[in-house]
Image 1 (cartoon, helix red, strand yellow):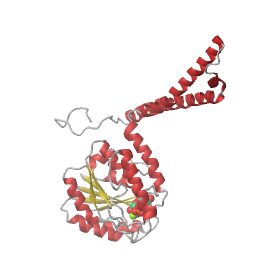
Image 2 (cartoon, protein in one colour):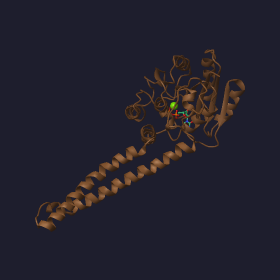
Image 3 (cartoon, helix red, strand yellow):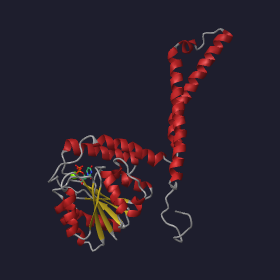
Image 4 (cartoon, helix red, strand yellow):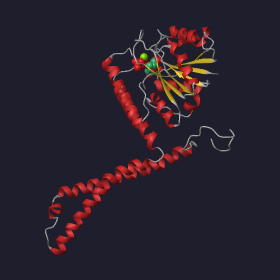
Amino acid sequence: MDVSVVIPVYNEEECIELLCERLHQSLSQTNRAYEVILVDDGSTDQTWPKLQACIERYPHLQAIRFRRNFGQTAAMSAGFHAAEGEVVVTLDADLQNDPDDIPRLLARMDEGYDVVSGWRKDRKDPFVNRRLPSIIANWLISRITGVYLHDYGCTLKAYRREVIRDVHLYGEMHRFIPALASWVGGRLDEVVVGHHARQHGQSKYGISRTFRVILDLITVKFLLRYSMGPMQMFGKIGLFFTIPSLLLFAIMIGGHLSFLLFDTTLASELVKRPFWLVSATMLMFLGVQFISMGLLAEIQIRTYHESQNKRTYVIRETMPPTVVGAR
Ligand code: UDP
Ligand code: MG
C-alpha cells in the first residue's frame, strides 16, 4: 500500500458523497495503491448510512465508526492505527481542503520528506474568530516548538507512516505532529494548498479551541524539551526561589548575631521588618515545592519510559538492518 488517506468525519452528511467522488477522482489518477479511511466520530445525522453507501460504490474506501464523539484528534488517531500505506495523508471531510492537492503533497514526499504540511495561504474563513487566532497560534507554536510552519492548523498534511507510528495523540495534539516529527529527526516541508469556504454544514469549533490549543502547546513544549529531564526545568525554577531565600536568611541571621554579640544596629532594618522574613519563608516554600515536583516528575518519566519499553532516543537506520536490540 502506498497511500492511506485518513479523514475525520463528524456530522457532515451533506459533504460525504461529493467528498468520496472527489477523492476517487484525484487519487485514481496518481497510479499509486491507495486506501481511504473515513472515521465517523460519533455523528448523529445521516453520515454513517451515507458512508456505507459510498463504500459499496468505491472499492478503496473503508470506514470506522466511533460509539460517541471523541473529537477530531481521536478520530485521526484511529485512522493512523488502521492505516497501512507508506504515506498517510489527512484532510477534512468538509471539502474546505481540496482533494486535488493530494498528488502534489505526495510528489513532495517522494523527494524524501517525512512530513509535508499544507499551507492555506489564501484561507477562506472569517478573519476575527478564525484567521487572526490562527496567525497568533502559528507564530506561538513556531516560536515555542522551534519548528517554523505557516499553518499548523491545516489538516491537509502528509506523513511518512513510521513517523506517526509512535506518536500518541491526546487532546488537540494532532496539529503538533509536525513538531513531534521534527523532534524525532523528521524532515519537514510546506506546500501551498487551496482552501474553500465551507459549503455545507457548520464548523464544529468556536473560539474556545484557541485556549485548548494553547494548553496543549504547553504540554507539547514540556514533552519536547524536558520529558527526558524534568528536574532540569522544575529544579531551575526551584533554585531561582531558594537561592534568594537562603541569602535573605543568611543576612537576617547575621544581623541577629551582630545585634546580640556586639549590640550594634547593623542590618537591624532587615531584621525588624516582617516583610523580609515573610518573603524569605515564602520563597523557600516555593523553591522546595518546585524541586520536589521535579523529583516526582523524574520518577514519573522513568515509569513512563520503562513501562512502555520506550527508548530515550530514536534510530533512523542500522547497518546491517537487523542490529540486535537496537529498536
Ligand atoms: N471533526 C471531527 N470530530 C469533531 C469535530 C470535527 O471528526 O469533534 C471533523 C469535521 O467533520 C471535519 C474536521 O474535523 O472533517 C474539521 O472540522 P471543522 O471543519 O468543523 O473545523 P474548521 O475547518 O472549522 O476549523
Ligand atoms: Mg472545516
